[in-house]
Image 1 (spheres, one colour):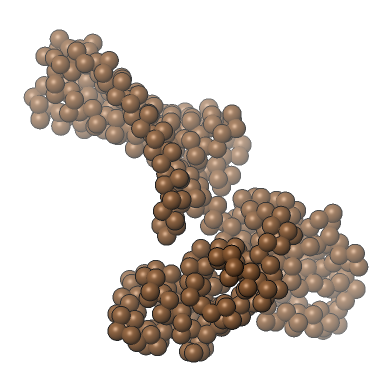
Image 2: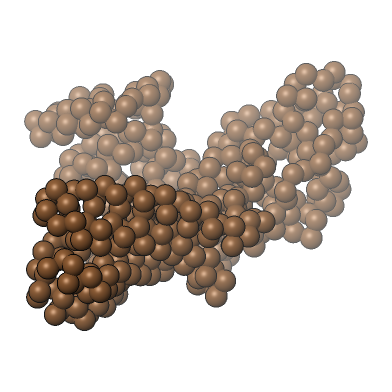
Amino acid sequence: MVEPAAYQETIISADEAAVIAREVRRLIREGDERSAWEQLRHLHPADMGNIVAALPRTSREAIVAVMSPDAVAWMFRHMNPVQAARVSARLSTGILSTALTRVNPRTALDILRLVPGSRARQVAEAIGQPPDDPAVETTPLDTASGFMVTRFPTVHPDQRVESARTNLRLLARDDHNFTHVFVIDGDNQLVGQVTMIDLAMSADDAPITELIMPSMAPVSPETPREECARLQRHYNLTQLPVVEDGRLIGVIPSTFLLSASVAQDTEQILQVANVAGDSPDGPLLGSIRTRLPWLTINLATTFLAAFTVSLFESTLARVVVLAAFLPVVAGQGGIGGTQTLTLIIRAMALGELVGMRARRLLTRELILGLIHGVWLGVLVAVIAALWKQNLALAVVLGVAMLGNMAMAGVVGAGVPLLLRRIGVDPAVASAVVVTTVTDVCGFVLFLGIASAAITLIV
């Protein structure tokens, strides 16, 4: 068994990681797993985990077979549970059990729930944490209680700095780097907090009461993950106390707050593209269930656009060249609407629209759309005039572009605001609506104006 090194945690770029991954695969193909491990052992565990998780199954099994429990645990701390469960498939029950006892209990349980049933029970018995523990199953993973820790530094108001430092030494080897010590009374009621710097710099006999400051933004166990992430960003917090009836029951460390913030941002991005819950290394069936319904809905909306075009068949029959410019008008409108939509969804997620009136926002996007439309309209008109030698067609195209870009700005901002007003998640439904509206409006504007000016174009 190869023991982990002193973990120099060398920081590498994505390109360097790709080179190391290729070298690891080559060494494993040649049967030299120990040399392959030597390529990984000095990396940061986050890079190590990414490389190992991306290896083919047989190569992954070969490399983890020579890793010690310490190395596996070090890597598990920086992997998502799906990756960790996949990596653990060929680990012996003993090594996996030992590794899971050295990670955060919540992480261990999340991994166990993804391990096949009989093996999960064996490992759970070994570490004393059954994966079907009702107390754990009823804890929502998307609330503060789901990712808080229950081991954290505390002091009492009647203590002095020297005795408080003694308390801290008991947590010296804890996994989490706390920046504050929480002050509680005899009933565990949260009184305030003291910074680590104040404790380090104050005199030994200084009373804790002289150092206490209010605790910022305490949350309840039921506080959603998204709200915890918002508080962390808005108030620039490094940790959040979790209180129930005034009693301090847990703390969300900075690393967990960052993970919550990243998870929220990632979910918002995926929802805009209607692939929330999907991942590049997830199960194929899960990806199909996530993507296919929205692709089917989008197919229905494209038929609406096709029906709109069919209403102008006689115009297209007389001026066939109009068909060549349909994607120009509709495509630019779609891009403009998506740009606005993305900015609005992001602003909603970050709470940046608080206090901003919808009319002001829509007016701003309308003005932007008109400015963009004037520039793009003139540009496409010049191109059409030079290409097709038809001034009337160029004017029709330019006017349609101007109108559709103005419409795209208003729709891109208005749709998410409207959906939020009626209680629908804007990140989930906005993209399909905005794309459909800009396509249909683009076709109606272009072909409608062309129909009105058909005698000038022909």
